[in-house]
Length: 192
View 1: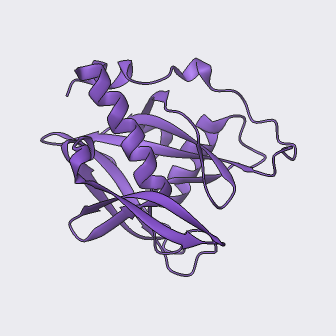
View 2 (view 1 turned 90 degrees about the horizontal axis):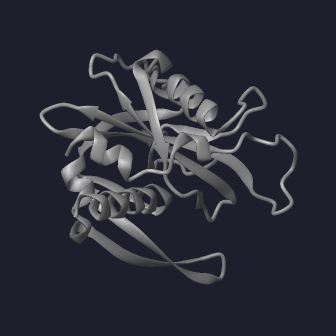
């Protein structure tokens, strides 16, 4: 898939609003993640597996990213800062190219998924407190929506549905799988 096709499937960076840094009326917390694409033999998406002791989403597969901090002017700052803190990728090696629609998590985060290309020469410096593993999933796998399964879980007194994508023994589910699915749908619509 061509870079330009990926970029055309996204909302422009100019559509991103700055963080207000005041308590939200809806009780949600602001967060941003980075859907980081690296060109190998084909495009790959970089993902992390969180450590088991974390308070939010322990042991789950996620994108680099997290809660907005007061030093962050916008979701772009949050995504770049968190990526550097978690996996050590310097922002100078990342070209941000767009965003997809925000995702509301069941744990009360309003997550802005930012998409960027990373220079394949990047070196990882993993924060072992937060990140247990880093791995890459081929974009062709992400785009194959027939690989996603719709699952149901009973949580906090009600049934909830979520996407799950299995890849090389990794269970990618919940918010991460939902954002990957939304990204795939955009790419498939643009390249059709």
